[in-house]
Image 1 (cartoon, rainbow, N blue to C red):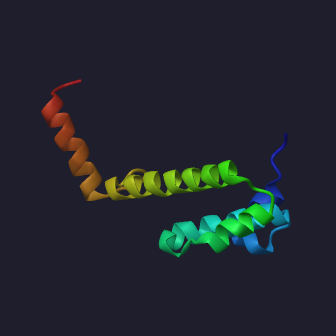
Image 2 (cartoon, helix red, strand yellow):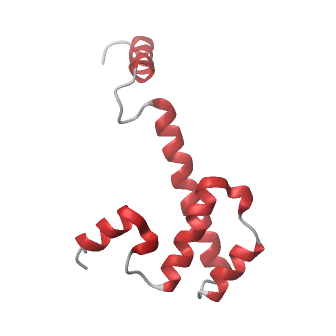
Length: 102
């Protein structure tokens, strides 16, 4: 399998305009809704996923994977992972001080 750079870029710009299958579009619509406000997800969304060809197991997998990525990204953001934040540096310095020299 080769990476389709143009598709990746189109998805990054605006997945709603990318050349993807109807099934992928319905899945991404659900994931975006879940990411923005999971309380807005409803039976209607699940019915749309089923109509696009996903069974209950697929819907559960989509939900769990998207929710996990949302969770882990928020944890990383809160701890400053990948960013130069004073709080992240303070946490690192504090944990090094407690654990002693390496």
